[in-house]
Image 1 (cartoon, rainbow, N blue to C red):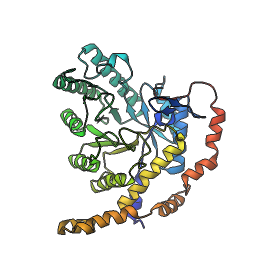
Image 2: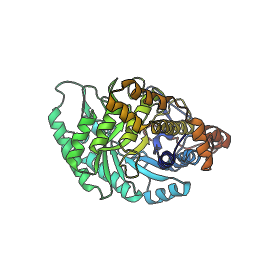
Image 3: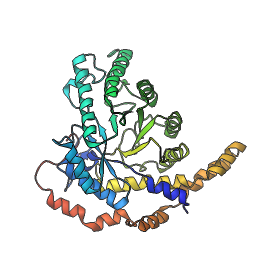
Length: 387
């Protein structure tokens, strides 16, 4: 089913796991506890390592600062290596301090802006210690009412703040700016869409990129168009993969609309996003509210792999010929044939050939790891949203 080039691409595929996905999570009304929840970042790394051991797809783990603060990040990086994973993207947090009620990097008060800038500079210090490449910024700043804030002034202050942060980056480091159409604010968000993010990162320089979170768009947005455009412009730095039915639901990627995930990955393939020199980093950003955390992450990375494999099956030569000749049905048929192909048996064979379990979900259950950590991790404070 897969030729050598496809297998090479699949072997190269990596999806970064978020440390916070292994903590307790819930709805806006309640956070639910789960036996065996990690109490420290090192226990989160141990859980993430289980996902990578069983799938071969998740070699790096993203950190969230200050949630994952430790005294010695170089030692934490060494711990990660011992577990078989590496530390990846460093995510900043300006959405929990009272000082940021009316903004962080866009705040009208220069003292508050400086505090937010300094937080990001501290995140870069973490990157220096861990060898991380990317600083990811999701900015919660915005307004709820017309007239509440000076829209243009907030953009000017954001540009100035980002410039200070960008100029602190090392030569091999990147700033990746995420966007979100609404929440926590509802009239304006200061980075509401890919165009705003693109405008800011292009003004900063070549090492500033856009992060696309698949749950951060208005209903019916054609996300694959955005993917194609950002790849075309050379500014797609990373994905935050999740799934949504209504808004920023942060569900398991592919759960709500597998065909959308396929279409997105078809554009990633078309645009060279899986090439050896691609600047695109793939990461999960999910909130496992009711499902167990480790198998939830296993299912997620397998969903990405499966839809990537289907996207690789699109006959690009035949597709181009159909497009050039105006054969609408033939072109669409090539997409649909690839999407409906069941690649799971072939992927199971391929995993087995590489010394991985044919069925990672079943292998996790059989390992007894979940039962063991439920017994061992008693006492202390379980990690959760905001910790």
